[in-house]
Length: 113
Length: 109
Image (cartoon, each protein chain N blue to C red):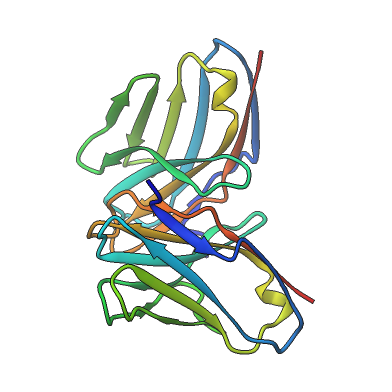
């Protein structure tokens, strides 16, 4: 009963390094999302996908790229990490429309030094 | 521009009493509202929702009220239990979903 799985759970990067966060869902959901959570800010949408092969920008997309090559996977990339990208990242999925309840992974805590 | 606001960062209540969590929004185009619950080191989990065509939705101990004219929604938990201690996020949706900053609820035995 995996639901949404995020890899890795923790990571420390140096400024300028790159990395990819992986999200996998086994619920056959069409929509997938990447959020970041910062203190006092709630969850802010970075990018989302409405289906395999599609991606779109959310509220705070700068400095991130995404890919949805397979329906079950949604990758978030940081090409050149900056300290401002230190955050907890959550992936989520929903069956179809964005106002359907979203299922979240347990998050990736990322620190950029 | 924070379109969804939870003005109380924390709330503490006694076990068995009512917990009332509040949320305000600014965008009148939002048509669906949700509450999520989050425990430490876990992702948010969906709790209850309400469509803009309704003013109340109830699920067991949890009731959500929507006041469209005031652009305000609230979550009532009755009776509160220690296991309800968590961070509660409200969210509002139209084409995408916007979240509030969360309210940390502590239910004391």
